[in-house]
Image (cartoon, rainbow, N blue to C red; front, side, top):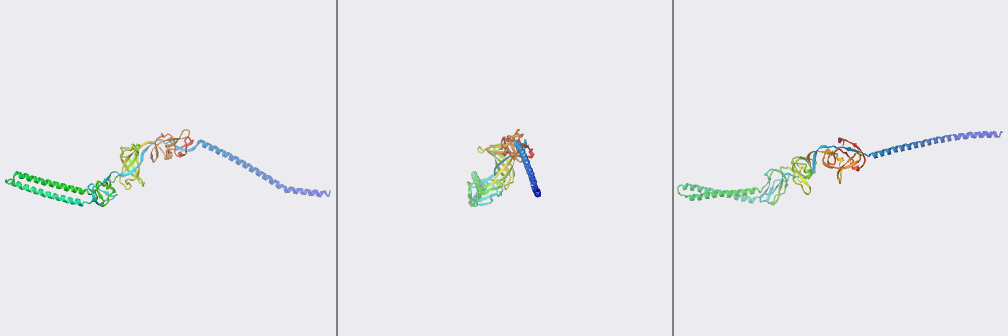
Length: 398
C-alpha cells in the first residue's frame, strides 16, 4: 500500500499536467475551423452576387441589342430657301480692244505706255518713224501753194479781160477761155489740198492711239520694232477697265438664271469676294460638254486679273424645298442618299436628288416629301434593315 500510494499520486500528477498542456491547442483548432467556414461562406456569397450581376448585365445587353443603337432623326419638312448656283470659270475683260497698226507701218520710235497703264481715248500709245512721210507732206503743201498762185493769176487775168471787153479789145471767146483757165486753176488748188490732207491723215495714222479709255492689259511692242498691217494686236485694252467672269453652267442651271441677277465672285488665291451681275446668258449650249456660259459683269479691282480662275455663287431666286444638315446626306458611286427610319424602327436607304448648298444645309430636290424620319448623323455606319432606337430632334437642334 505504501508502495502503491506514491505511484497513484505520481500518476495523478501526470494526468493533471497532461491536460493543462493540450487544452489551448484544441481551442485554437476550433477557432481556425470557424474562420474557414466564414471564408467559404463569403466566397459563396460573392460568387452568387457576381453571377446575378452578370446575368442582369447580359439581360440588359440583350435588351439593348434587341432595341438597336440610339440614332438621332429629324423630320425636315419644307422651307423657303434662297436658290444658289455654284459655278466656276475664268476672268476676262468685259470688252477687250485689240489695238494694231492702222497705217502702212514702219519702225517704232517710241512707246509711251506699258501694261497696267490707264489711258484715255485718242491718247498716243506709240509712234512710228515718219521721216519720209514728212517730206512727202512738205511737198504736198508746196503743191498747194503753187496751185493757189496759179489760181490767183488766172483770176487776175480774167478780171482784166472783163474790163477790156467793154471797150471792144477782148472778144467773148477770150473771156470764155480765161474763165476756163481760172476754173482749172481753182480745181487744181482743191486737188492739191486733198492730196496734202491725205498725206497728213496717213502720217497721223502712224501714231498708234487708244480707241477708247481703259486699262492696258498687254503691250507687244518695243522701240526699233518694224510693224505693219500684219503685225497683229500690239496692245490690248480693257474698255473702261470693266471685267467679267465667264461662268460655265450646265444647261439645267442655265435655265434657272436670267440677266440682272446678283452673283458673288471669289478669285482663286484670295478669300475676297466681289459682287457682280449677270449681263448675258449664253443662247447656245456646247453639244460636247452640255454647258453654257453666264457672263457676270464686274467693276475693276486689282485682284481681278483676266485669264485667272474664279468661283461664282449665283442667285437663282427663292424656292420651297427640303433642307437637311450636310451630315445627313451621304454619297457613293450610286449617287446621293440618306437613311430614314421606318415604322418598325429599321434603317432604310433612300436615294435623293440634291440642290443648292446654303448656310442652313443641303436642299433636297427629290426623293423625300419632308415627313420622313431622316437620320441626322452616323448614317455611314448603318446598314439597310438594321434596327435602331430613333431619338427625335427638332430642326433647330440638329
